Image (cartoon, rainbow, N blue to C red; front, side, top):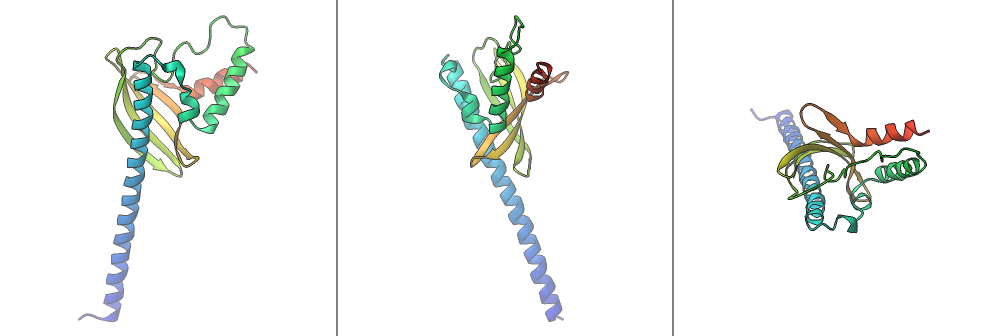
Length: 172
């Protein structure tokens, strides 16, 4: 027998299913938006480098968080006041290289999205060698920006921003 109580339960169950479905759809839409943003960033980086015009753009200001840019300014100041002969950064973190040829990227995958932060993995290729990287992203200024780059090869893991912070701290 169909009672008002049964009808109420059916309506509530339908609302819960609809709500869960809407949340899942929203999360998938955000993940898709982040993937497209990372694809746009790395398309620009790879195209610019392959044209050997990498000095023509400030990728940090275009694609990195305010926090990243503040850390890099602090890093530049610390490095300029250093008496060290060799620069701390002896490679280009955008291509994870000193030299490059036929840069490309693939396998962009959003692995986590939570509270305005996202984690994205991708593979970057230089001279045909794969470099796996993790991007820590943050939503600010109306879009997704890179907050950290972590490179790893299975045996080691290089946390770029941690290295920058450690260097700054060592110079104080």
